[in-house]
Every structure is written in structure tokens, then in C-alpha cells.
Length: 329
Ligand code: DP6
Image (cartoon, rainbow, N blue to C red):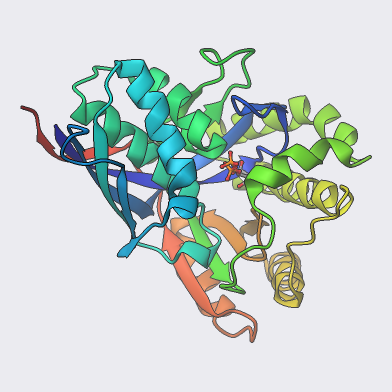
């Protein structure tokens, strides 16, 4: 009744931003991401009878969560309890190998690991597609972390059909995510709240209208391992998403001065010196630089010269969640 799972975070090339149905995290559009090998969450979960443990006990990065902080995770465990028709309580110990505020999505790896560990420890024999749908309810982007490598989350039309699938395995293309951390401060507005504001931006409709084309471009660029086809599309979608964020009501402005410093630097290195690297940005101020393996050390040493870069985290493409230990009955 106990399992330990490691799940990688992911970085989206075409973003999930905006929900059509917040109750089930049904997104307004498909998204495409890369699962990360070197930014992951390791979660050990043990189910105990309710008479031995009166409520779920959750420890995250060494800190025991209070009721308020645990609420979103307990709601997720409730879904899995309902599915398995049990009322056991969970003891969960979860550890990220990257700082929470690094701009790497801990909710993606966290909910992928939690879902997989909880279902494994209950002996539920669910495939990755089913686990993807369950993880999605906890955190939208977690649906993609159920698969390794290059992944597309199909919007679908209901709870069962809104799931991710693998486009290519991790070894298809040695594409790196070099994360330049500008600020470690916790964000003022969570993605969960942000997704519900997207529709209030006059620019949202314009972004969504261009997505079919952008998704096709990204699929083709990934299939052909063509960075110069991929790069402009991912930069454009990250900027379009941030334009939607900035113009929603209330306005969400995640960028810091350092965000712009890095954007300008990358464009300059690329346009004037031919450095093959492109950026994307999630719901925060930090910049993810996407490049091929051979370019990653150069990107890293250049980023180190910028005054606004506090920390750099480098990741390769990663696998689907891995079962590290399993104890059944
Ligand atoms: C900007 O998956 O973190 O990273 O579903 O509320 O947990 P919740 O949101 P989340 O949103 C991710 C938004 C994004 C883009 C992306 O990863 O696609």
C-alpha cells in the first residue's frame, strides 16, 4: 500500500492558458511540451486505514503542510479515493529537486507524481492515458508529465477525452531547457486563478485563433528536429500568452526588469552572433532558453554574465514517471 514515484516537470512550447471548464480543468486549447529529466518531484505515498490516520498527512520539501496549504492536494486525493471507493488516508512525503520558486512548474511534476503514487499504492492498474486525465484535475500541466519526451495535451471535450499523448520519446531530440532564474519570489497570482482570467483579455481571441497553425508548426518542427522552425513559434506563443495575461482584468504582469534584459540578450546573441537559442516564459519572470545539447554550455556561460540572472538550471528531455519503490500488501 506504499509507492515511491519520480515524475519530471515539463516546459510548454505551446501554452495552456485559459480554461473552458474550471471544474475539470478543460483547457481552451491543445498544448505541447517537453518533459524534463533534471527537474523532478519524488513522492512517497502510503495509504493507511482511517482509524490509524484521521486525516491526510502531507510533507513537501521537508515542511508539513497545514490544512490551508494541503487543501488542493487533499481534494485530489479525494478524487482518487472516490475512484477506488476507499476511505483510507494518505501519508505523503514529496521532494522537489529544484527550488519551488525557480519558474519550473512544481505543480506539473508534483501532481503527476502524486497521482501515479496514489493509484499504484492502491493497486489500481491504470494506463498513462487514464492517469493523465486524473492528474489534469489536480493541475492542468500535470496531464502532460504522465508521458516522457515530447507531449501533446489534446483539449478533448470532457473529463475522459482531455488527455495527453506522446508525440516523440525523450531520445528523439536532445533539446535542452536552460532556465535563467530572475527572481525566486513567490508569484502573487497563481496559474489556477490566471486561467480563469484569460477570457477577460481582448487579446485572448486573437491568440486562440492562431493556435491551430502554431500547433501544426510545432508538430512539424519537432518531427524534423528543426530548431529554427520551432523557435520563432514558441517565442511568439509565450509573448502572446503574456500579452493576454497583461491585458486581462485584473491585469497580470509577471515580468521583472531582468526578464526583458534576458529576452533582449538572447535576440542579440542569435541575430548578431548566430547563437541557436530561443526563449519561452511560463507564469513567472524567469526565462527558459531552448537549445540543442551542444549549445547549452554556451548559453549557460553567457547567461552567467547577465546581472539579473540569479541561478541557472539545465535540463535534458526526460522519461515518463518512474516507479522507484513499490510495496503492495
Ligand atoms: C503558464 O498547470 O500550473 O505553465 O492547472 O491551475 O495547475 P493549474 O495550472 P498550471 O498552468 C500552467 C500554465 C503555464 C503554461 C503551460 O505549462 O502550458
